[in-house]
Amino acid sequence: MDTNTNSRLEYLYKEYVRLSDKLEDLSKSTYDDFKALGALGAVIIIWKPVSEVILPASPNLDSSLFLFLGFLSLATIIGLIALLNLMKHAYAWYFIHNLKAYELEIKKELGEAGNAQIFNFNIGKEETKFIMASYRLSFRVFLFSFSAFISLVPFIILCYSNIFYAVLYLLVSSLGFLIYLQIFRSVLKQYSNQKFL
Image (cartoon, rainbow, N blue to C red; front, side, top):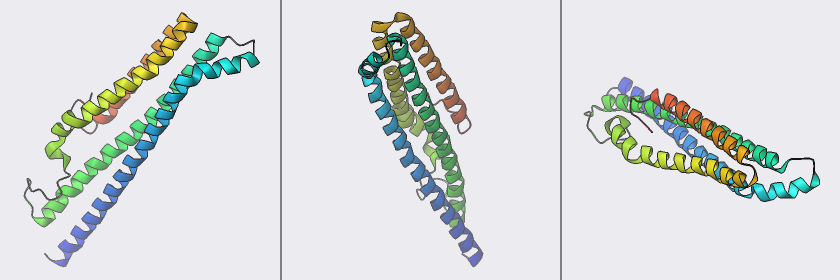
C-alpha cells in the first residue's frame, strides 16, 4: 500500500469510528427516554389518588373532567417523548447507513472480498434477518404493550368516573397511536424497503 492509500484508509477508519461513537451515544440516550416513559407510566397509575387530593381544595372543578384532562395531558407528554425517540431512531438508521458506506470503502481499500468477516457490522448482509428476528418483534411487542397500557389503564379508571370521558380518551389515545405508527413507518421506509411493523 502506498502512502496515499494509507492516508485514505486512515481517514475512512477515523470517520467510521467517529460515526460508530455517535451511534453508540445516541443509543445510550434513547434509554433515557425509556426511563422517562416509565416514570410517566407510574404517574398514570397514581393520577386518580392525586386528583382526589387536589379536588377537595377546589370544589368548583368537575372531578371527571379533571381526571380526564390529567390523563390526556400525560398521554400528550408521552406522545412527545415518543416522537423525540422516533427522531433519535431515524437518526440512528441514518448513522447505520453511513457506517455501511464507510465499511464498504474500507473493505475496498483493504482488498477484502464482499463476504469477508472483517468489519462485519455491514447490515446489508443480514438486514432482513436482523429486522425480522429481533428488531421487528421486540419493538412491536414493546410498542403495542406500552400503548395498551397508556390507553387502557386510564380508560378503565375513567369508566368508573364518566363513560363519555373514558370513550373520548380511548379514541384520542388510539388516534395518537395510529398517527405515531404512520410517522414511524414513513421515517423508516426511507432507509429500507422492508416492513418494520
